[in-house]
Length: 213
View 1 (tube, helix red, strand yellow):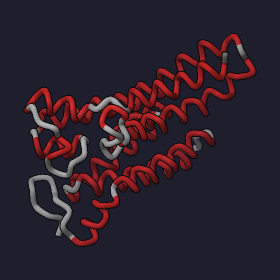
View 2 (tube, rainbow, N blue to C red):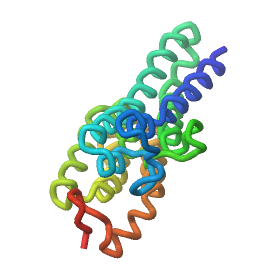
View 3 (cartoon, rainbow, N blue to C red):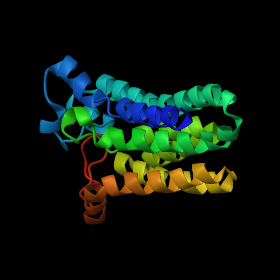
């Protein structure tokens, strides 16, 4: 039973992460498939550019909450269930990180959108906030600084992803949290491969439409 509850929790986290927020919001607001516009992904940045500020912020907040809720709900559920199985309580952090990783993957590889999706930066931040909120706040602050300095969302997302692992180590968090931060950061960076190529070429767009050159 203990295993079954843990597996249910991480599977539910995947389905929550896979909720196609950007697709649903743009369908509701503009009756378009966001995958056929802009960069083709369903993340908040593409929605912001194609549909507008309000829709983009809505998608950003919901995507962040997906990661936060996936991890927090797993912690609450398993802590309650494993109270009857004390020997399993030590596994809760590992299940939480599993739920976080599945939520991140679900956002970018959604079963509802034929395994397409966004780049998982916002959902990853939500996961970080749920695991240890000071690290999440620190990561959000780094993103804000990078965005203010360079006005390139992808650069802020990549920098924040890499910084999240460093924050978890610096703040002396448990091993499962550190490993998830490393894995999640690498995944987010890999999802930004095309952006990295444009950043190197100086053609990555800034907020407002200009390129990064």
